[in-house]
Image 1 (cartoon, helix red, strand yellow):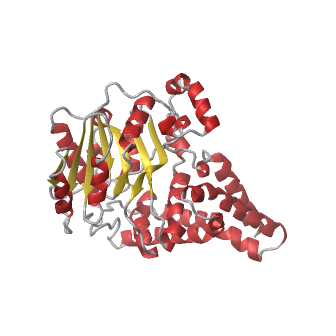
Image 2: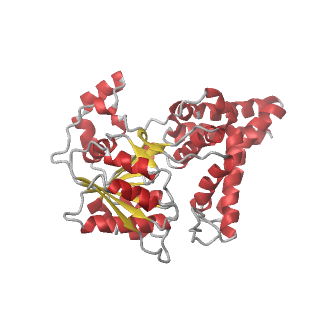
Image 3: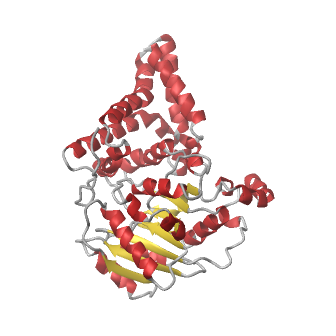
Amino acid sequence: MTLIALVAVVAWIYLLLGRGFFWLARERDGAAGSIHDARFERRNLPRLGEIARRGLRRDEMGLPPPEPWPSVVAVVPARNEADVVARSIGSLLAQDYPGDFRIILVDDDSSDGTASAATALQGLRSKLRVVGGAPLPPGWTGKLWAMAQGIERARKAPGPPDFLLLTDADIAHAPDNLRSLVERARAGHLVLASLMARLTVETWAERLLVPAFVFFFAMLYPFAWVNDPRSATAAAAGGCMLVDRAALEEAGGIEVIAGDLIDDCALAALMKRHGPIWLGLTDRARSLRPYRSFAAIGRMVSRSAFAQLGFSTWMLAATVAGMALLYVAPPVIALFGTGVARIAGAAAWVAMAASYQPMLHFYRLGFWRGALLPLIGACYVAFTLTSAIDHWRGRGGMWKGRAQAIGTPT
């Protein structure tokens, strides 16, 4: 027991100090210093110092606007989003972007009136076009197929756009979100700029489990490493991604990742081979999709959890063992152990609770929830096991009536 507790302490020391300080949640769209571009930082070093001292927001930075403003087409894949699509598309129509901006919504065989809800908005603004998606071909996931059709439409329009805004139909954007993203992309010479949309935390289940979703994602893909061109780590958040269209075509296009269930991270890995990328937290993009129950969150997580492990049974076993060591063992030993084991277990528990505080603060939740991280970790282990079982039953990647996981278990 003492050995397990000590190993847990060492593991948490590594997580706190050795993974890009992921837990500090410093990479945000209001933090200019997280643009990893040496030329940008040299040009703006005095201004960056002022920002650090005064805690200025990004919209107070005074970055020079692009001249001219690049053209952008938003591509929105939508499947059964009738309850939220009007708010999402409405927020895109309300963007204060100074350059040419158009929106293409691809209806992916919805059965709930998504197309009708979006078409009602199409009559209000000429910049919106609603198109019906073609049948899903073999080897593609539904979202990527809809996205590919939208991108192809954008390319065929008069003058292909400089950037593509790939966003979900359940994301609401602040009026300055696109302008801010384009400024960041141009200032940092980025081929991909992505924002982790703020998720809803209104129900008890959301408040318990949702911040941990972002916390665990950042642990897997430390944002500081993602944003460092010298690091191979690549990740993105699929709800809001601004992509350099020419760089995407140079990388082979969206068809290169046609069957990837974790499409956002696959796209990030593809794009990072062609230039710098950036990922951060934000208040400018917010999810409109509520997860009102424990089961709903479980379905959202389990859709791709086993894919994250490469559909490997060995990786699943290692993940379960690692989660047990990191999250379950410390409180158990702290409560029921003795001597050095109890002290080490308590230290590991305190370390994990402390590491969760910045994310809880970002979501404006009480600090005491950090002590619940062992319970939350156990829940995510259960979701991961469910994901594997669903895959073995031929229902992997189930989302809105489609089983999309096509990986082979190992």
